[in-house]
Length: 224
Ligand SMILES: [Zn+2]
Image (tube, rainbow, N blue to C red; front, side, top):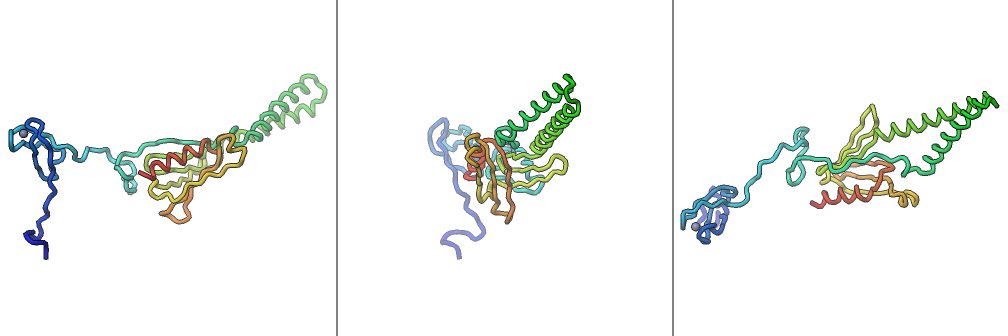
């Protein structure tokens, strides 16, 4: 049994109230009048009730069956990072760079001065190997990225065979930053994000610049 005086099956709509723009008296309207024009019963002036659902663009995540994040706004990229080379491994980077320059210069010198042709070619060969090491490092870094949108964090691994994993901000259980002392000084580190929704799912990217800013960005969306 319902409360006294309440008809079963009838839902009583909450009323909206607004002061009339013209006569300043109170206008009442049902709650579905939000965003609509209502005539003032006192003076006849047409008043626009505030609120109402603003028209919104389709959310890209809805197309793949993912429910849109709170707010329902379209997904947009907020930040995208790739692993750094110099800042993440300054000693390795400088060592490789110096070795490359020295072996190339030494090789050219030895060959042009005809002091030792064999040693000259060996130096150039070493320089070639170091160029290859740089190239592989660079290509590996280009394939890895971490992208934060207003809805989720996406990790991409591998330049050719792409592996992607993503964690919705609502599902983030923990964001962890791992930094050595030198990495802290250089402002780089590893960032790991674990998901509460899928057990064991984790995103982890090494050698990213400014990992604290990435964590703060994700935290900002988590707390929305
Ligand atoms: Zn009025």
